[in-house]
Length: 144
Image (cartoon, rainbow, N blue to C red; front, side, top):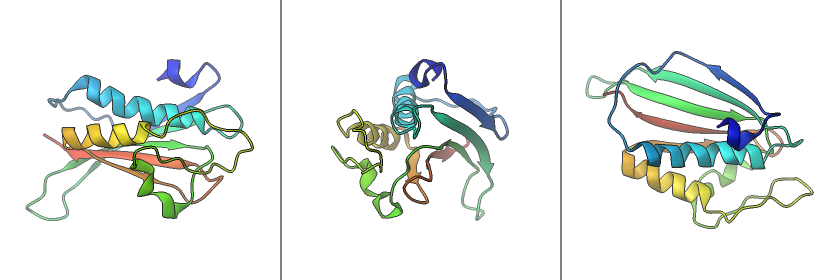
């Protein structure tokens, strides 16, 4: 992800290691995460991406559920209006950033990421407290 973010990026990692084996399609998982990381770069407020990668294991809410893993990408970029969180994953959808500069892209990255995550059985969600407050994207799946 360093090549995507650039040499000036600030990247931190928090949370426990996800120390289990799983069967997945590595290229599809890479497509998902690369699109999320690329958005952190494109929507950085001052041109310097700040990204925190948070891992977590969630215990089941009921006996019928399994433990779940989470991989959350939290950026300090432009963010978006919370009412747009469901629209983010639509094909060709572009949010307003609040920046005076246009952001390159087609509006397909998050659409492709969501499609790939569904194929892998992984839930992908996006959240922001509002414009100028950064964004977070969370991947969640069952622990094998």
